[in-house]
Length: 296
Figure 1: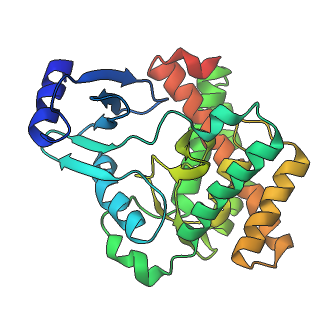
Figure 2: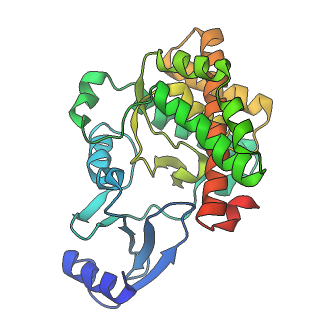
């Protein structure tokens, strides 16, 4: 959609915001199929405009999930207006500082921000099923054995196959290892909570020292350890073993969880799954969709 049309839509949908001259600038956003724009009016007055793909069902769920999270006290951007026919959402501008942007700061600074992020995700994980059952039909399918197997196969096809040139026969042989199916079945058999699904440093915006969650349209029932693995083993950020263990301990204490040994093993398996999925995504986004930054 052309910039001029987006500006007209903004003036139409948000007349109070759009008095005077409006500037609109695209925002680069990783491997998303959505388009993001920062719309600015008066100094210090701005919002984010999202143009999403109508063909992807989960994009339509963003607004409903955002409203649900806000109702339950979880920090996410406010929704100003949603035009489902055009696939346009106007949301609060939380700024440009994500958790990733603090990666070179001292641990005194970063640690506090990571703990703030863990506070938010803990609130999500603590919601009882009776609270999120209202979202049935408005979330992607839950994490089950088939989804864990899909992540594994995604890695073999797009990382080993596309990036490293491993032949299909070897891919199938590796993918059929009994241990991988056992891991998928084991994780699928554990109790589920509500998870973000992509809880990594670039999906956490920091405003006034407080973490806010974004890109949560993939939220679904799954394992808390999967979200924790996404953050603690984030391939974009380097955490020392001491820092990682400190955050892991903070989360468990925050939720009053004591069975550290069993959770540690689940965390390790979830980290394996998450990193396989991420490596597969790099191959797909870089070689299939032509976004070469994912191959750097």
